[in-house]
Amino acid sequence: MKTPLLLASALLLTAPACHSNRGETHAPAQTTTTVQPDDTPLKMQQVVVKQADRHSFEAQICVPVSGPQPLADSLTVFVKKWCGIKTPDCSPIRPQLLKMAAKFISEGKDCDNEMKANSGEDDDLMPAWEATRTVELNTSNERYVTLHANAYIYTGGAHGMPADEYYTFDAHTGRCITYHDVFASAHSREMLKLVEQELHRQCNLDDDFWDFHLPATVALVPQGICFGYAAYEIGPYAIGMPSCILKPSQVSAYLTPYGKKLLGM
Image (cartoon, rainbow, N blue to C red; front, side, top):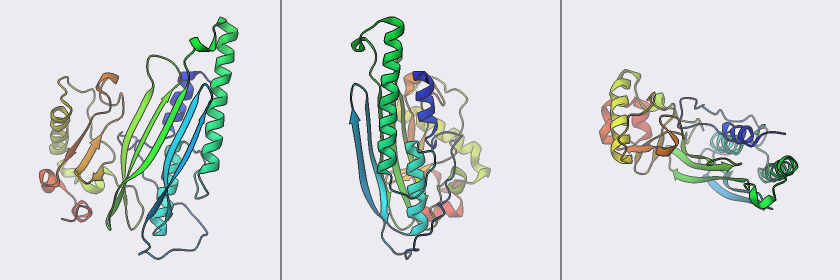
């Protein structure tokens, strides 16, 4: 049986890490469905799965039901990867979420039984497992689409593991936008200094960060360009998941031509 710590790590590591230097670009899935016209408006639908016994699993996931096919396919594959579905494709997500929920609760019960057999403690003295995942549409325009993804898992211990991230996709190709798509490599030193300063200022942080670096991906949101980091990525758990937003005017000199196009500049 998996230990709670290993299970938590496994579930969290299945999620693509927008805020870390391990971020990845997601290619559109191969599909045999009819190609929709590029001007098909993107439409998202929320899928909700809730299961609870002593342990609980909840997912509220927005998935595309129509839109330009490269974009819709890419968003569908991404959402499934975020949810921890190991073989993402464009099939309906609800049955796969239901299987995940049942497995999570079943493994929680197995852990209860093993701990009770070893210690003789009642269920009330054992931590209840909890897993939540949400994906919602943040921004959609003719240039890009941004999703907001949030997760939390607790399987015992001092605290659970959270994730709160934003991902931006090219509205025409469906490709996940990376830092180097938006910013020129020649200005990495200036950007490193600026992002670090803004994180300290906007998050009211005084201590130095651990091995500070620029994230592999950035997100375009209504307020500007979001730079965010996962728990433990650049500092202790106590600082949370620090993020900052830079206005396009702050970084206009550092943008690539493609970055300027995405921002409508």
